[in-house]
Length: 380
Image (tube, rainbow, N blue to C red; front, side, top):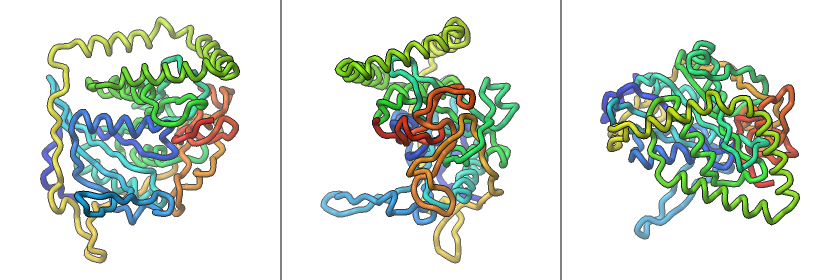
């Protein structure tokens, strides 16, 4: 049993996770968790042992000076707790890290051990993928789950994907095997402007998360940043006639596909979000984050390191989407180094019968497909 000293009893906690790497096109997902942590003043209470999961030749440590003293920051995954105030307070457990280079099952087991000890009711994993979507339209965000009951009750897609996957897909499947409700939210980033940051995609993920968990999320400067980002891309596209023509083609395809839904659930969701933001007392209270004390974990007498116990190991993952073709970073996974494949729709591929959404995962150019749980794509 994990003993987390200094962490208060949590209220209806939800775990929200994001990982840099193949699952994070334009850094949209990891930036969303950073935003939550910053707005609600979270403080880290635990971190996984970097030696266990990372290849430091792939994810290198960084050196910095602190009052003239050289210090090292190691790549890892950290957890923090924030309490969201309002009429119905609720706690969020934020998980922010890098897709591990190895031992993915053990990695997920450690996170699930924390979730179990903290009483987490649901896990929401954020991701971003490259897609054939125009930057001038709202960012498509899809929600998927491996739980058929959860798919029905929360209006989500039930995953049907088969193929290579990344840590987002593995963690979601691990949650399913452990009996923890889990949802993945995926934002589609235009593949022709995939370099980070992408505040418009981050904003779309936060809006969908807000709808999913019923909390009002303070957006700060994100809306203005998103407008400035779109204006900048507009200006760049206007300078290249071929790009402008391509964007127009994407706009026409998107508008035609979405025309039947224009007056349906999308408008209703937007109106509900508008009302929620106008409710008195609905604003977030001060963030409450606590550190876990000197020894929040059980100690391994053999190695002297502290770690939580590990629940049952997960099985293979499945995420809906098209047939993926992993890129150069897609060799990750348990027992390997580098950023592993995450599976959903391959980046840069247009919509087809196998990929009806046309969304592509990050990490590759339009000519090179990967699967949609991947991110961190580069400009094409």
